[in-house]
Image 1: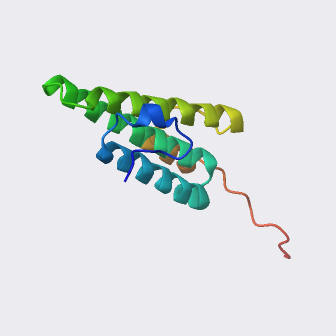
Image 2 (image 1 turned 180 degrees about the vertical axis):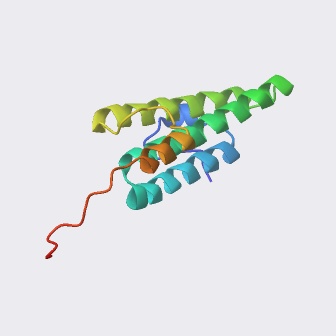
Length: 121
């Protein structure tokens, strides 16, 4: 199986490990599922958060000791993050940074309730 991401430059992805390629593909599949269930903005926030976690893991692994392909992994994950940020900007999908779960909860917590309409009395 080749190290090729959908829509990615194969010369750049060839240096990434299969594990990173698989992780990016899984994040994209989850993003699409989230988009169907929760909308575009939520799917972008979730995917960006997961990509940043993957990037942090790869940077940490590189600091433990350089292994073959880790620099390529970091490059590929960074490219995917930038590509997703570009999609967010192009679609007006909201903020390109992941929202904290507490912020999401607070927005619903203080939501106004509308009184029932068409009441006959």
